[in-house]
Image 1 (cartoon, rainbow, N blue to C red):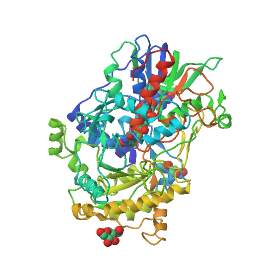
Image 2: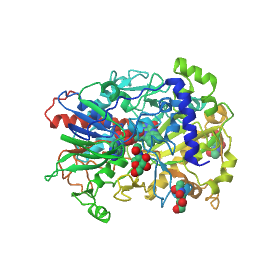
Image 3: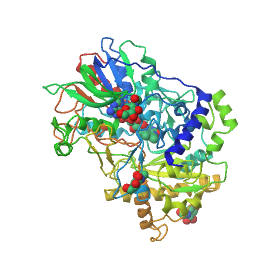
Length: 607
Ligand SMILES: Cc1cc2nc3c(=O)[nH]c(=O)nc-3n(C[C@H](O)[C@H](O)[C@H](O)COP(=O)(O)OP(=O)(O)OC[C@H]3O[C@@H](n4cnc5c(N)ncnc54)[C@H](O)[C@@H]3O)c2cc1C
Ligand SMILES: *[C@@H]1O[C@H](CO)[C@@H](O)[C@H](O)[C@H]1NC(C)=O
Ligand SMILES: *[C@@H]1O[C@H](CO)[C@@H](O)[C@H](O)[C@H]1NC(C)=O
Ligand SMILES: *[C@@H]1O[C@H](CO)[C@@H](O)[C@H](O)[C@H]1NC(C)=O
């Protein structure tokens, strides 16, 4: 059975179960006239687009139209314990992109490429992500401001993080000043964890690192993630910001509408967009602004298709250049991880799909919204460390994600096929791991030095773009991973892990690295180049920067350079990626961006 067919069958089964557990709750959508005029068009209803649309529509006299390429979220996406399958290749809620073949990394994966999931659905990637709610480091935002982007310093963005949040987690004297209540997005403590989670936090303490709420004062230590979950169900950006406001007469959401081009008048003012819906080409016009919130892959793609980007690239594809902006699609950053640092534990200590879907788990979830189905599958905790000597000790250079699943467990190699390991070469390796219950500690670079790009494959708007993360092209990234792997091994070798849950390192030599003595520095460097891959956090491809930076794409108020009436508001505007998962910052960027628009149009903001 082909991988995506298997995934389709799996999705049907999980959809059936999810329907029984949570039912369906579709978003109210509209079909507008083939030529419609509004004040603001928002392209994309994802993590950033949803708050942008919600906040703009607070101004009663502004007509806001959201055009979303995807459709309704599936029921299984709402159930945290099974929703990670929604991101698998073949899902209808996913653009199903892949990376280009990587020169310096991903050697273990099919054609040196891996799937690069991105949400194509109402709510965008917040519908298929792992729900971890991590804001990043104070330093990230202060650095954005210091680069010449006023209004993005930590003190300012903290106000927006508080405004967007309805915090339901544990509050203490220490973390209270950093959290908000009554905001649109529900954020909670994770409701369930396996024995691996408890042991992980104990391992941190054993190594001298505190357990903490990383969204408060300090980010340095170990934590179990807060999650975007409400009443035990995934709370997407669209659930938080669009659903409660779609009854407003001035806010409309049209799904299945794939924007193919931004339209401009002779003065280079964005006047609207062209889009495909139901096989028809339609147009929508904006009296005030077009706001592109299509994410860090599709926002640069749309600008390029519209003639905004590096002239040479556009010329080569026969696209007329409106503005020669060399930065569009450049500066792609992500948080690469090294997969396969795994331990086995005795059965029952880690996560298992079989147990998650067992009758007692279903009952617990259906009636109390508790238990393994209420938490993202396998996601147990993170450690945040600074491993490079020197530098600011309050800023991590490494994140360690622990998931209570080893490579070969669950549905016979599901994880390994999800990440697209080379089948033939890895058969023997995986055989040794098959059926093992365990956990994986994935070191992640919080701010890698390598930079990649997003470019067009062709001028056809429905062709997937070329996504080249260019992982490990900077040699420092490999050396930092080497330190990271050693720290991961130290976590697994604590008393808490070894004696507490019987963790045993899986020391099977990695195919392709057998020529190096097992466990030597060169072995781990080789391991890194083979197993490093994405954690699905594209950012930076429409960089915010002052005009002195030739690779900037948007101004500090997120206006696209060289044109009028056009902004980009999403994860693509980050000049440097944040030092943690990118969903919370993307939502904050949406909130922040909406206020810039309001201010520019003379609306009083209160923050
Ligand atoms: C599998 C996976 C797991 C992740 N796990 C986590 C996690 O646990 N924690 C975390 O913080 N982050 C996580 N992330 C990352 C996080 O979800 C994203 O960084 C964030 O959602 C990006 O927000 P955005 O608004 O920039 O883009 P998106 O949320 O992707 O929104 C873009 C929207 O625009 C729409 N769109 C695109 N092109 C067009 C077009 N041409 N016309 C109309 N509409 C269009 C898309 O369909 C989509 O709805 C994960 C991501 C993935 C894919
Ligand atoms: C790998 O490359 C081959 C040859 O170009 C191609 O046929 C195949 O579809 C590719 N597989 C993936 C998963 O990209
Ligand atoms: C759109 O058109 C193509 C052929 O041009 C056809 O295969 C497809 O079924 C059509 N889709 C819809 C939704 O009508
Ligand atoms: C694990 O820790 C013990 C001490 O607790 C040490 O003797 C041993 O060498 C360590 N093993 C590894 C692989 O680091």
